[in-house]
Image (cartoon, rainbow, N blue to C red; front, side, top):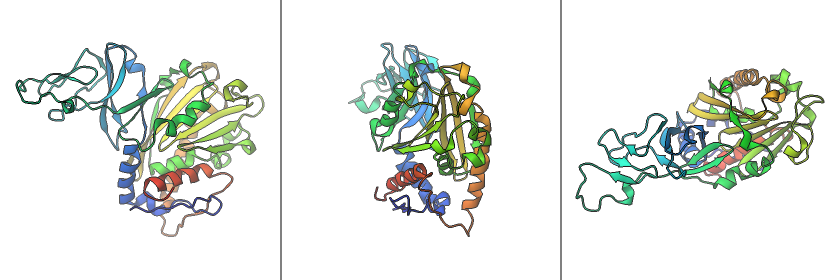
Amino acid sequence: MIRYPVDADVASARVLDPAFYADPAAWAAVRERVFARSWQWLDDLGAVAERGSLAPRALLPGLLDEPLLLARDGEGALRCLSNVCTHRGNVLVHADCAADAIRCRYHARRFDLAGRVLSSPGFEGLPGFPAPSDDLPQAQLRTWAGLAFAALDPAESWDATFGDAVRATSALPLDALVRDPKRDRDFEVRAHWALYVENFLEGFHVPYVHPELAKEIVLPDYRVETFAGSVLQVAHAKPGRPAFAPQACGGERGVAALYWWIFPNLMLNFYPWGLSLNHVQPLGAERTRVVYRGYAWDAAHAQGGAGGALDTVEEEDEAIVEAVQRGVRSRLYRAGRYSARHERGVHHFHRLLAAALGEQA
């Protein structure tokens, strides 16, 4: 058992043991117990909008690299299939395309867009062939806000993980979101993935690290709420700055941003103009890729408010997280205490990690 316990009482707990960030056993355990058993964002649904469309995607590139295939059949049903031939393991589809069947380029086995074997040269007359095991396996698939999410063997249900965020954002015009490629970014951060998540989960650092963002929001009103598989941070706008209409936030006025984190590595940042999605992809103990994708429903507000200068905020975050990465390696550093007022989100994340590693929840 990999033990990194975190006390349930945030007021007395200490932060995650710094040994965690360099422990190869913890890294391997988190890969299998957290990431391989969690819901992961794949992409938006733009590439599979039409019937007969195929879109190969990897589940968590750089860590799991599980080859998957979004497939919309001729009836319009969307599935997430294994993108690996059931004969000898060849990857089947290499680029987005339209097709009425899936054909393996190795030995010509063919599947329909539901994953069922249609033909397999050289297997004629073989007893018991084809069997259900010769069809392409399916991953669990959910779609929300025009996005696709998949899981292989999730430790928690979709509702337990995403349900609170789905219900809380139901008044937002999610169906109106349109992909804005100008907002697409891929960053590589020289730090452990969990340090990047920790930084996201608290607004404590905003006045010290993000001076321009601090001018946009009312810091004393910054709020953190924890849920079973997620954390919400609510930032309120200063007078005259962009904010949601009250009906979009359950009647709450002056909301500048809704920062949702979904365990373990997804950030959904809702602003008056739309959504900035951040997917944190672990590459190594000190390397993390962060994928930014932008979706707008109101381009008129895109350049102002809390969701304005996102590139600058990202650069500031990267610098501080990389500094923390160097610091947690220190032989003199010992795990500090949580700020019970500001770091409940970080504490919740650490508790979820500890539970996944075998500690009591």
